[in-house]
Image (tube, rainbow, N blue to C red; front, side):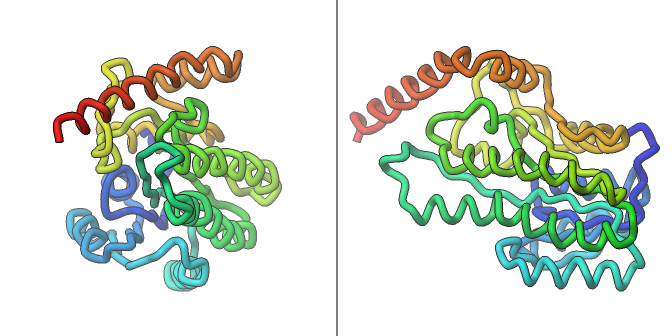
Amino acid sequence: MSGTFSPKVAIVTGGGSGIGAAVAKELAATAGTRVIVADLSLEKAQATATEIGALAEAVQLDVVDSDQVDVLVKRVKATYGSLDLMFNSAGVSCYGEILKLTYGDWQRILKVNLFGVIAGSIAAYAVMAEQGYGHIINMGSMAAFLHDPLFAPYVTSKCGVVGFSRALACEAEGHGVVVSVVCPGNVRTPMLNDCEPSRFTPPISPQDAARRILDAASKKRMFVVFPFYARLIWWLDRLSPKLLIPIRREILRRARQRDQHLSGNH
């Protein structure tokens, strides 16, 4: 971090693990931020808060429940006097071809990844617009422009997060509120348990991701893409969406070949 980004009070959803936990720890250690660690699992939130120490508060939060989110944001503002940063990091994924996914799979992913981000952003934006400052950071993904097959619900949710965040950023700037959307490549979190990344897209650590995110926040960047291979994929998709079609087909071919091999062994 450059040292210029020092929010006094932050809420981090999905703070019990992965990037959310890493950001919460980095905020407290580097900027001395009061961090509200929010997670569906209170046990995981408490573990992160315990590791941080006195600057952290653990809360159980279901980001799908917009009333819960709104109550938390208002309580934090009333208790600490401000809400400087809202980091919407809670997310889930699923793996499989569309023919094998249920409508319930789609609902679960979209409710958490997209509508959870919308709920957190709307609640925080209302408070921040009134106080005249604040920063909202939403978790997108490289999947928003790679459009990986076998992760269609996840891809759809992250495309929505990117579009929502960019629209919100335009409206929010007039109220002194900065909005960023983060689209990292592979990060070594539990979400990678479903598949092993290619050697061409190696995962980085959550700690590395957290430092990159907060450094970008210090520069008030709206669109944050890292590492280099993620930016390359982003550039190629912007240049011509057709350029990535061979990669998508190869991902699908290898997955189907692997599934056939596994089924043949049973």
